[in-house]
Image 1 (cartoon, one colour):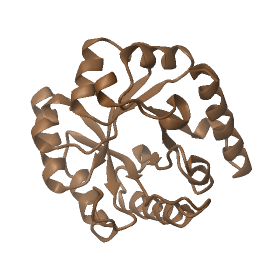
Image 2: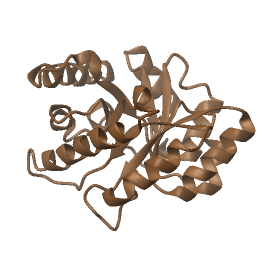
Image 3: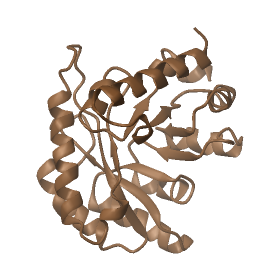
Image 4: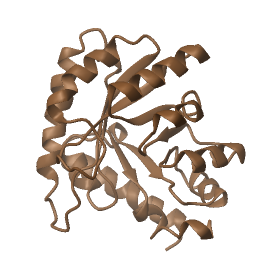
Length: 236
């Protein structure tokens, strides 16, 4: 199967999962995780119907922007771990930063957005599985971080993101997705002055996006199912 066929297949599976959950397929955004992909591959994906690209690494994001590889996409997101010393290279360059997991990072994003005179859309990343190896704030710290985000005028909190533990067992992550959905509902209710823009629950990747949709995801981040196994960095 070529890239276009893979994209069509994933779009069809997203639509079927949404309908099975009693939802409209239009409620779900497919974010193509373009980590390690070439400029040409990204252009081909956009030509085949991808409208949102998600980048994991600042260096790759910068290179693709310089090459205008995202031309034609509606949005570009940053979905990887973001270090505060690289905030200047991301804020104002992407439509959504999905991986904000600390007050320190939140404040750095706000400071840069203030300098640029913009409001940067963000998601708060939650370490829903409590894994030491993963980024994300602890679920119990989320209400405080969300409140702090709501107090910063140059940051707009759009919702939550999570990467559950890796599991080979089908359906094993549904409980984490369900927990994220409840956190999303709870936070939205508490953000009384921000409820209208709390519209994004980003969860689910190539192996489990259908389960994520069943549990309420509004955005899924898919890479391997679209592009195949990632090529080595040196072969970009």
